[in-house]
Each structure stands twice: as structure tokens, then as C-alpha cells.
Length: 418
Ligand SMILES: Nc1ncnc2c1ncn2[C@@H]1O[C@H](COP(=O)(O)OP(=O)(O)O)[C@@H](O)[C@H]1O
Ligand SMILES: O=C(O)[C@@H](O)C(=O)COP(=O)(O)O
Image (cartoon, rainbow, N blue to C red; front, side, top):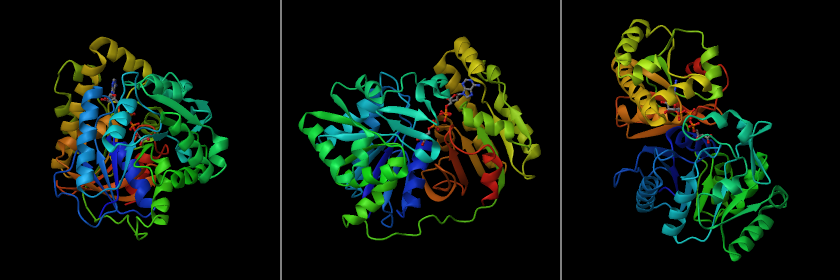
């Protein structure tokens, strides 16, 4: 029976944390959207509900997150995790603060930590400031994100603009004093009415300490990094029995393709490094409503079966800005996501069985179009990106890659791992 229920605000983020739990011995299933009653198998330790709530209106994000919580409680989960991006993707309107508040209210809990650190992927937090590699978040490529440009690195201030409750900080020194000291610091803040606590972390060892300190918390919030310490903490509490060999996937044949809708720096580098057939979609024509997808599919059908092919919409920050100025952020992103979704459908119908999708919103659109209801989580390709196998649809291996993750050779390496 599942003990941990995760509510993830996007699809790549969901596979990221699901991979982290699997790597640490929790048998994990990821559901696409809120699972139907009775849909969770008994032989899992964790359920990750993949939502697409990162960039929607806060009230809709709250409603969907609460529906996910209900389903996870009905499935027997005893601990809950709200997963958002390791770059804290949000705006002053939400959705991290509003969803955190709503989940705390629903669980009747007093406090939650906020920790998007993921040291293996260069995300660290020091005095509440989020770093990407060796630069502040607000100096990183995230300041140009198409949907949620991140221009403030101080997470305490970012979060304080998203909630009416008190936001506090536990600095690194108190984390590194050990889990008992950290627990005491959190309890003191709770006694002072501090409901949301940003917790520093710069290394996996810090995340292990944090995991132990919050092992009794009903709600933990963060990126996938802070989940690395939770399985051990739950084991120590007798909540989790075994350390399963949790990452086996069925063998699925089929041609290989990559769909890239992310404009993040890592994805742009991976596109530049890709050596096989590559079609860059005409995004202006997509926004004008022309049938760009049909022509792209005809191009792809000619090429599939001889090694991976790549179809991308991704562009530089300047080009993205220009398109958004011309057509609006929502219209341009949705038109491109719709094209990616229909391309995915066409590719699978044409024989693609192994698909890499780059971009969180893009992955949400693609998986929705493919009628996938759940994903089994398999082995890791690069930190934060596992292979997964579809459940409920035509058998398919999918790697949903966060825009920011993966080495430059990801689009080739992923298929060599199978
Ligand atoms: N050339 C482009 N111009 C403007 N927007 C784009 C372009 N290519 C893709 N997009 C949109 O940008 C968004 C990228 O978000 P996402 O897929 O979540 O990537 P990431 O994981 O990098 O954040 C999507 O909505 C996508 O449709
Ligand atoms: O935590 C992360 O960085 C990722 O798991 C994540 O959420 C990815 O989001 P996108 O960059 O939008 O793919």
C-alpha cells in the first residue's frame, strides 16, 4: 500500500521526483492527472500525481491539487509532497504559495518546508537565495522563461508575495547542525506562527538531514532533491518495509523520436549537439494557424526507423520574445503545445515506440494527447530524467525531460540506454 502521495505541478517534474523515489528504493507509479478510484495498484510505495498546474490560475491549481490530495488519501497515503520546479517556477499570483496554503489547510497541518535544492543539477539554496550552478537564479537563463520569468532569487521574498501567512528561513548552518537541531528550529518557527519555511541546502548530505527532520511532517514541499532523504526517514519510522529493486521496465520496440518544445538553455544545447535528422518547426506559421504539424509529420514518416529524429519548436530567448509580442504568451505557447501534441499522436501511429519529450508544459500536452493514464518509472538517463513506460495507452517508452536537465548528448544517449 502506498505511503507517500506526491502532487506534482508538471509532468517532467513528476517523473523527476518519481525517478528519485525509485532510485532510493520506493516502488513508484506516476498517474497522469488525478487517478480514478481503485486505479492505484497495491504493490507500490509511492504515487506521484502529475498535474499541469504550474502556469494556470491559482484557484484552478488549488482545486486540482486538492482533488489529487483526496485521491491520494483514499489510496491510503500517510505523507504528502508538493513537487514544484527546482528553479521555483512561479509568479506573484502563484502557484507555489496558494497550493502550499491549501494543502496545509486540508491536512490541518501547521507548517511546511520549501526546498527546491537539487545539488546534482546545480540547484542550491544559501540564506534563502537560489543558485543555478554558480550564479543566482535571477541571473540565470530562468530570467527569460517564456511563462514564468524568475527575476528574484530570494525565495523568502518570492514566497511571501504568494501567501498572506508568515514565511521564514532556516539557514544552512542550522541544517548542518543535524536533523534534531533542524527539527527544533522548525518547531520554534511554528510556535512563532511561521507557516512556510524556506530551508537552505547545498549538498545531498544536507538533503539527507532535512529528510530525517521532516519525516513526521504531513506535508513536505520542494523539488525532487529533498525527496532523496525521505525513503530512509520513512524506513527508520517503520513506514516503509523494503528496499525494492524498483526500476525495471517492460521491453518495448519501435522507432525513436524526440519532440522539443522547451526553450531552456540545456535543451537549446542538446538540439545543437544532435547529429541526426532535425526539423525546426515554423512557429510563426503555427501561430497563424497553418497546418505545420501535417507537413512535419510527412517529413518524419520518411525518416523514422533509421535512428532517432528530432522535431523542435525551441528558439532563443530573443525569438521567443518576438513571437510572444506578436501573438501573446498564451496564444503562442498553446498553439505550439497543440502542434506538439498532434505530432506525438501522428508519430506513435507511424511506428514511434520510444519518445523523448523536452519541456514540462510540452510533455503535459503530449502525454495528454497519447491517452496515457499512468507511467511506470524505470532507470535514470541523466539526473532528474528516467525512462518510463506508458500504462493505459499503446505500449510506449517515454522520457519526459525537464527543459533544464540533461547533458548535451541527451537526445542520443537516451536511446542508447535502452
Ligand atoms: N519558439 C517558441 N516561441 C515561443 N514559445 C515557444 C517556442 N517554442 C516552444 N514554446 C513554448 O514555450 C513553452 C516552454 O515550456 P516547457 O515545455 O515547460 O519547457 P521548459 O521545461 O523548458 O520550461 C511551451 O509552452 C512551448 O509551447
Ligand atoms: O525540478 C525541476 O527542475 C524539474 O523537475 C521540473 O519541474 C522541470 O520543469 P520544466 O523545466 O518546466 O520541465
